[in-house]
Amino acid sequence: MPTVTDFDTAAARSLLSELYRCGVDSVDGARVLASHARVEDGEWRFERAGRGLALPLPAANSAGRLRLIGIGKAAAALAEGVLASLSDGPQPDDVFLIVSESARAQAIRLMSALSPGALTVHVGEHPLPGAASEAAGRALIEFIGAPRAEDRYIVMLSGGASALCAVPAAEITLADKQRATALIMRSGAPIDEINALRRALSALKGGGLARQLAPAQFVTVAISDVRGDDPAVIGSGPTVACATEPQALIRSLETRGVWTQLPSRVQQLLQRRSLAQASLDAQPELSVSVEGSLGRYAVIASLDDALQAVRREAERRGLAVQALGRTLYDTTDVHALEWSEYLRASRPMRGDLETRPVLWLAGGEPVVAVRGHGRGGRAQHLAMQVAERIQGLAEVCMLAAGTDGRDGPTDAAGGFADGGTWRRIRAAGVDPAALLADDDSHTALTLAGDVFRAEATATNVADLVMAISGYR
Image (cartoon, rainbow, N blue to C red):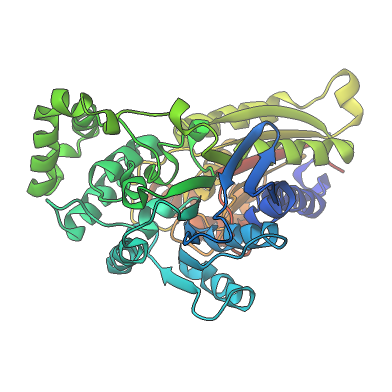
């Protein structure tokens, strides 16, 4: 019978790392836009697998300006792709980017492709907004100024936009917004609930940026890191009119035990909006406008694209792929149990699978309710929970990692897990169960040699989770 030591763990980890990179490359903003966007017949156009949009460019003899606005971890990469697509057309008059610290250098490198003074770069905080995030948002409002009807804007959004650009609603302070955001994030709320609160507390989210840009024409290209790829949720929907549902948000906050801990100004703001719900719903500019934004908003890269790329590459290498799709949106506890069962059930293999290793593949954003004081992220936490359940299991190796190259407040992208992970932590003289209970997955996986590190990827489409069974 095979043992843990018979399994070629190093080769399995190498293959999983290469498949991760394949998935990330398929959703790289610079590559996608350089390949699928172009200038044609006086328009800037994007088309990819049925997704498309078009923006009439300023006429040569008009006073209109072509301006780029990028917000998010991938803003610099997206801007690079747009500039490449404009190589045979008009060049932008100016570019305004709000990025994370890891993307600062990439953003500044764009200066060489632009006229002097055309590039403005701000760095915000993530995952919680801070003073720099507010300063960046206010600078963006100043940059937009008084748009002209002849102006054209290409807005580029990606994961992290909600935190990196944060101008609080007039009735509250940045500290109020920070406190509220931190509370809901630690409650284990999914990203759609987190972004609903962000929209409610913001001057730019939930269509606020679109109102700032009027009467100019604009399009939005986005890399989605959210479930369902809803434009109202990506970056908290700055260019999409969103229906406000303060009462539903209040109920959610109450259910999660967060409502009573919120700053009083936040409670008062949401209560006032709840009381005015009927009148707000009657205002057309606050209603959801999906059909109206057709041709003006395109999700250029999503988790589906990354999963498809990984599947194709794995099959090309001869693996039998068990594709589970975008299914990881429950708690890590639930998914750890599921994945341990998948890995146990796939051995021994039957029929055609008997001669081929199996790749289990899924994506999403599993939820962790933080109760301890350790360091880690949802991918590392999931890896640790799986490791606990597959102790001693031979011929399996799992990788859970964020496509942005960062998992929680750590320098890791995620973590590996195999049948020997738990044993290796114990061999280091530490109780792995105690570390897991303290939400200290980063320390635990570091002791096991199972931390997965990657450079910041300049994209983000949530997490990839893969596991190989029977690889030799």
